[in-house]
Length: 463
Image 1 (cartoon, helix red, strand yellow):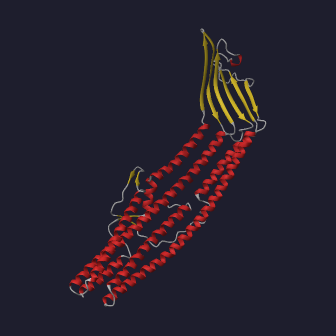
Image 2 (cartoon, one colour; image 1 turned 90 degrees about the vertical axis):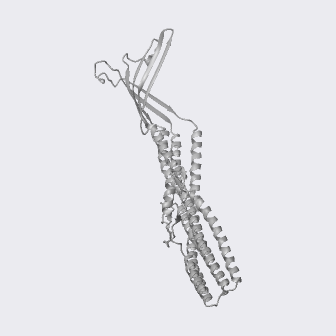
């Protein structure tokens, strides 16, 4: 009877341990620390940030269209010991906003066959040239359109990075919670194997003392073998989940990391339900990205419509002859100048009107695509919220069920102690208890996975 009582107390002690993870000296990897590592070092995270770097480079390139430029043009013809002409023109060109540009320089030309229009004083000719576009290009041109679009591209790059990181977070969190599930299931069956082994040893000892029939040893051993098979399956699942998790653990994006054998997932606390902000749809990065894309197309369309205007360019050049030993502006006269007017206008504008129509089609196509994406997001979020709420309710019921199966197991053990039950019935109660524990862990992990998918699909992310 002492062996029977010892068996009973061991059954009660070990079955209680199945309800919660055992605490040890292992290192706990929390979801927050894990995601920080993914965000900082995963190659896909670093690749996503390249989108932003590229957009910054594009904006720098577009801004370069407005950089001042030094220039020098030298042209000379020499034939049969005669200098036909030497043309030199140097200065600085400064592009400005609203179709305005300025140029200042120095021109000196000479030669035996120099054209009269290129003739300059012997000391050369200083000039300041101001050019203004009055028609096409007055309010917007290729340079200004490129700079505006580059700024929008930089803003949209932020949303592209956010979307890429959200997808990475979702996959990473699914791997984490699968690792959690397999780790806890492995714990459950590790304890179950210990329990089955203790039970088998106790039954065999009782059978040797002729306190129980030997057939019970076979029953106990079969249960021990069954628990070992379940444990081995859970170990395989855990190894696969751990290796999957390791694909998200990197150092500086180049060195893959491995989990230490003592690293364990964090226990799940009974946290509050996940709630999305009321404005999640308006602030969703996908829809924001489409807004910027439509705005970029609007700039392109504005540039296209600018082509319907006539091309009118006016230029006025102030001329001044330097005189040695005298102040630079002493010989300046408003009567010394050069001006030009260039005008053109296509008669039918078919190319321009066709371009406007094509851009208009793109704008409508993008708007329809945005509306379709918005509807798709709304439906996905509604489905995920329903799945999350139902899973949370299932989890509550499953916790109650596990407690009830545990109560049945403890009651069966007490009946066995009073000689009113059998080892077979205890085994049956224990099987149901183990199965309910595994289902409980499945639901715990599923709830966290759905929460992660809900947040990332809504564009909220985690960090």
